[in-house]
Image (cartoon, rainbow, N blue to C red):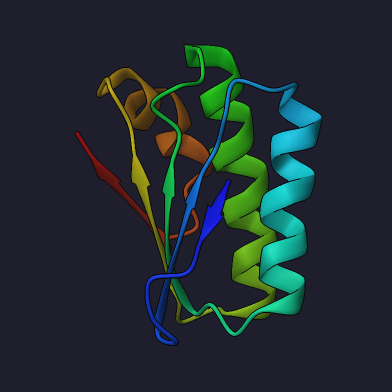
Length: 95
């Protein structure tokens, strides 16, 4: 499910699909939309899938928008702790 909030900020809610399907969905949104600032809800994903999706998609987002930011809506601080070593500075985790 994809919901556009406004032209300056977009929001994606990821379902509990395969990690690759979720990654592809976010990458496609980054590719097609002007989404320098975006919010992605990954609360429905398990810990490992959420870490994988947030790490790979934030790298993709950084390539296109080095000054941009992704707000990840998560259900545990463990995701931020686990991915912090790979953070490019464009992640913000909301609990």
